[in-house]
Length: 560
Image (tube, rainbow, N blue to C red; front, side, top):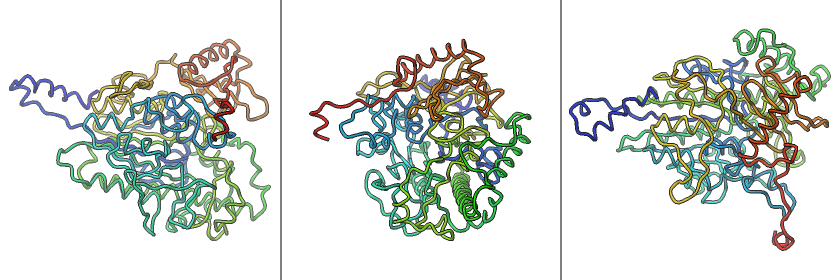
């Protein structure tokens, strides 16, 4: 760990030698973790997009792009991975809280599927705090509503958070994400009033800057978690960003998809023979839409693009503030999305029409309520297939890069990596030990992830061994990676089956080779069963994902 080699001088200092007294001591680096919400792989201009993201592009130009980096298929499971270094099924988020609420009354779930960050893990914030860091979060928490589950009680010194999974981005009469789903903004557990000019990305940035600027007499490093809610629905953006994209998407989603793939080809982000005609599944052709449908769809994508540019501007403001403070050179910045783009339209349209103003000229403004939809979500995920809430690449392969020119050279990484690797990586960077099976006075599950620091600094050739299996599961969609090979269970098309893809040759997952390689399918299925067993994933005897729900006793059910 090159950046901390001089920390060995600390040990010599304890010996009292003159050599030790003269040795330089390297300050622990600051850590800025930036997480976008539902951002697709191709949504940065550096990754093929027409969306303007100059600040993120600038960081990426001097950073290491992680081309094979994976999150969970949805937001709170990813955040559980991030905080615990574990598969979400080991950390309480095998099922999202929202999905658990939809279960019939009297239904219990198996341990690991509670929908909140479990107490059997030590959090990244706790461990960095123990290592001498000031710890801040500003943005979305989504890991538990009760006081003991909130971030100020899971290791954060300062926590300006939205507890739920999303909310309106402007201050308005109805801030809720969906019916019976409140929007709770807190500072260290206490309600906080939002200003009238509130816009989520701006406000979260302001609060994180406030935390960083607090007096620091001990000259401690900081761990700052910028947990933005953009570009998660409802799609809303300030007028100055909406104006940038007026008319930009009038040509339709097939044309934009082709343009993004052309840029990705030129940039070497996809193979030279990758098809330019994207296979958008389950959506009508642009030409078949009425003129009004085209206007509505194009305007919706304009708002999405505006949200991404607004987010980029706030990242730029945060980075500029660190530069002004003289902190940027000693700050590692890790940027990622929490999952692939959102395709669903799960919200009751009647509720939307009753509470929001979705006239075309109000699209993206205060009191509007828009979702990107399946076609544009698939464009956002390119070159990958599908989107959030699936374990296809479009749901789990996310844009990610690490910026720390002090010890990490700029370039591209094709090494397989996962969100669960972030905790071990940052702990090694900070010179902090990995936790074992005990933390303070409680039993915990040790982190599963692997540190990527030696790899990023050029001291290793892999993050995960080629025969190591990494798995994902959510709501019955499951997959397993071993090197470039991917086994995937898909039951969404009415023909449930195991599929096999070679991502080296087929990064778009369009050519299922399972029938031609039955022995490899059988071996990877055995690997999947083993992974599921050690990761607390409920499967049936055949290895297929199974429901974690179990009916409570009549006495328990009667109390619901």
